[in-house]
Length: 159
Image (cartoon, rainbow, N blue to C red; front, side, top):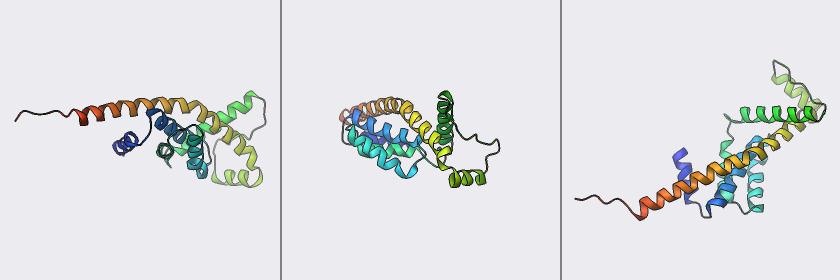
Protein backbone atom coordinates (compact mmCIF):
# COMPACT_ATOMS: atom_id res chain seq x y z
CA UNK A 1 0.00 0.00 0.00
CA UNK A 2 2.82 2.44 0.87
CA UNK A 3 4.65 1.70 -2.38
CA UNK A 4 1.46 2.19 -4.37
CA UNK A 5 0.77 5.49 -2.59
CA UNK A 6 4.32 6.68 -3.28
CA UNK A 7 3.98 5.85 -6.97
CA UNK A 8 0.63 7.64 -7.17
CA UNK A 9 2.10 10.76 -5.55
CA UNK A 10 5.18 11.02 -7.78
CA UNK A 11 3.12 10.47 -10.93
CA UNK A 12 0.63 13.22 -10.13
CA UNK A 13 0.72 16.26 -12.37
CA UNK A 14 1.97 19.34 -10.65
CA UNK A 15 4.94 20.67 -8.80
CA UNK A 16 6.40 19.01 -5.76
CA UNK A 17 5.19 22.01 -3.76
CA UNK A 18 1.58 21.65 -4.89
CA UNK A 19 1.57 17.92 -4.22
CA UNK A 20 3.05 18.38 -0.74
CA UNK A 21 0.59 21.21 0.00
CA UNK A 22 -2.41 19.08 -0.93
CA UNK A 23 -1.16 16.03 0.93
CA UNK A 24 -0.47 18.08 4.06
CA UNK A 25 -4.02 19.45 4.06
CA UNK A 26 -5.48 15.98 3.59
CA UNK A 27 -3.39 14.41 6.33
CA UNK A 28 -3.64 17.22 8.88
CA UNK A 29 -7.39 17.67 8.54
CA UNK A 30 -7.79 14.12 9.88
CA UNK A 31 -7.20 15.52 13.37
CA UNK A 32 -10.58 17.24 13.25
CA UNK A 33 -13.46 15.09 14.52
CA UNK A 34 -15.56 15.84 11.45
CA UNK A 35 -15.00 12.82 9.17
CA UNK A 36 -17.76 13.68 6.73
CA UNK A 37 -15.96 16.92 5.91
CA UNK A 38 -12.35 15.74 5.61
CA UNK A 39 -12.32 15.28 1.83
CA UNK A 40 -14.28 18.47 1.19
CA UNK A 41 -12.16 20.52 3.58
CA UNK A 42 -8.86 19.17 2.26
CA UNK A 43 -9.95 19.77 -1.33
CA UNK A 44 -11.14 23.31 -0.60
CA UNK A 45 -7.95 24.21 1.28
CA UNK A 46 -5.92 22.80 -1.61
CA UNK A 47 -7.84 24.81 -4.20
CA UNK A 48 -7.45 28.01 -2.16
CA UNK A 49 -3.66 27.51 -1.81
CA UNK A 50 -3.05 26.08 -5.29
CA UNK A 51 -2.28 22.70 -3.82
CA UNK A 52 -2.93 19.48 -5.68
CA UNK A 53 -6.50 18.33 -4.96
CA UNK A 54 -5.80 14.68 -5.80
CA UNK A 55 -2.88 14.59 -3.37
CA UNK A 56 -5.17 16.05 -0.70
CA UNK A 57 -7.46 13.06 -1.24
CA UNK A 58 -4.49 10.73 -0.80
CA UNK A 59 -3.54 12.64 2.35
CA UNK A 60 -6.93 12.00 3.94
CA UNK A 61 -5.98 8.32 3.98
CA UNK A 62 -3.81 9.12 7.02
CA UNK A 63 -7.09 9.17 8.92
CA UNK A 64 -8.28 5.58 9.20
CA UNK A 65 -10.42 3.66 11.67
CA UNK A 66 -7.12 2.63 13.30
CA UNK A 67 -5.66 6.14 13.59
CA UNK A 68 -8.81 8.18 14.33
CA UNK A 69 -9.12 7.12 17.99
CA UNK A 70 -5.55 8.29 18.71
CA UNK A 71 -5.85 11.45 16.62
CA UNK A 72 -9.20 12.41 18.11
CA UNK A 73 -8.10 11.65 21.68
CA UNK A 74 -5.10 13.94 21.07
CA UNK A 75 -7.46 16.57 19.62
CA UNK A 76 -9.74 16.46 22.65
CA UNK A 77 -6.79 16.63 25.08
CA UNK A 78 -5.29 19.56 23.15
CA UNK A 79 -8.62 21.40 23.22
CA UNK A 80 -8.96 20.57 26.91
CA UNK A 81 -5.54 22.08 27.64
CA UNK A 82 -6.27 25.15 25.50
CA UNK A 83 -9.58 25.77 27.26
CA UNK A 84 -8.00 25.32 30.68
CA UNK A 85 -5.30 27.85 29.79
CA UNK A 86 -8.02 30.41 29.07
CA UNK A 87 -10.12 29.40 32.07
CA UNK A 88 -13.05 28.15 30.00
CA UNK A 89 -15.53 25.61 31.38
CA UNK A 90 -15.21 22.13 29.90
CA UNK A 91 -16.71 18.73 30.54
CA UNK A 92 -14.43 16.45 32.49
CA UNK A 93 -14.08 13.06 30.85
CA UNK A 94 -14.73 10.25 33.30
CA UNK A 95 -11.92 7.83 34.10
CA UNK A 96 -13.99 4.94 32.74
CA UNK A 97 -15.37 6.45 29.55
CA UNK A 98 -18.47 4.64 28.37
CA UNK A 99 -20.55 4.77 25.24
CA UNK A 100 -23.56 5.74 27.39
CA UNK A 101 -21.70 8.80 28.70
CA UNK A 102 -20.84 9.95 25.17
CA UNK A 103 -24.40 9.44 23.93
CA UNK A 104 -25.75 11.35 26.93
CA UNK A 105 -23.30 14.23 26.39
CA UNK A 106 -24.05 14.44 22.66
CA UNK A 107 -27.79 14.27 23.34
CA UNK A 108 -28.04 16.79 26.18
CA UNK A 109 -24.90 19.00 25.97
CA UNK A 110 -23.28 18.47 22.57
CA UNK A 111 -21.32 21.71 22.54
CA UNK A 112 -19.66 21.07 25.92
CA UNK A 113 -17.83 18.12 24.41
CA UNK A 114 -17.55 19.14 20.75
CA UNK A 115 -16.17 22.66 21.10
CA UNK A 116 -12.92 21.69 22.85
CA UNK A 117 -12.64 18.60 20.64
CA UNK A 118 -13.02 20.57 17.41
CA UNK A 119 -10.79 23.37 18.71
CA UNK A 120 -8.06 20.88 19.60
CA UNK A 121 -8.46 19.25 16.19
CA UNK A 122 -7.84 22.55 14.42
CA UNK A 123 -4.88 23.33 16.69
CA UNK A 124 -3.33 19.94 15.84
CA UNK A 125 -4.16 20.46 12.18
CA UNK A 126 -2.22 23.73 12.20
CA UNK A 127 0.69 22.20 14.10
CA UNK A 128 0.90 19.02 12.01
CA UNK A 129 0.49 20.66 8.58
CA UNK A 130 4.15 21.77 8.31
CA UNK A 131 5.34 18.33 9.41
CA UNK A 132 3.24 16.55 6.77
CA UNK A 133 4.30 19.14 4.16
CA UNK A 134 8.01 18.68 4.81
CA UNK A 135 7.77 14.88 4.90
CA UNK A 136 5.75 14.73 1.69
CA UNK A 137 7.88 17.33 -0.12
CA UNK A 138 11.10 15.47 0.68
CA UNK A 139 9.61 12.09 -0.21
CA UNK A 140 8.15 13.24 -3.55
CA UNK A 141 11.31 15.15 -4.47
CA UNK A 142 13.55 12.18 -3.63
CA UNK A 143 11.29 9.65 -5.37
CA UNK A 144 10.93 11.79 -8.49
CA UNK A 145 14.70 12.21 -8.75
CA UNK A 146 15.20 8.48 -8.29
CA UNK A 147 12.46 7.69 -10.82
CA UNK A 148 14.01 10.06 -13.41
CA UNK A 149 17.49 8.69 -12.80
CA UNK A 150 16.35 5.07 -13.11
CA UNK A 151 14.15 5.62 -16.16
CA UNK A 152 16.17 8.20 -18.08
CA UNK A 153 19.54 6.56 -17.45
CA UNK A 154 18.88 2.87 -17.00
CA UNK A 155 21.77 0.70 -15.98
CA UNK A 156 22.98 -1.27 -18.97
CA UNK A 157 24.52 -4.60 -18.27
CA UNK A 158 27.19 -5.97 -20.57
CA UNK A 159 26.07 -9.14 -22.33
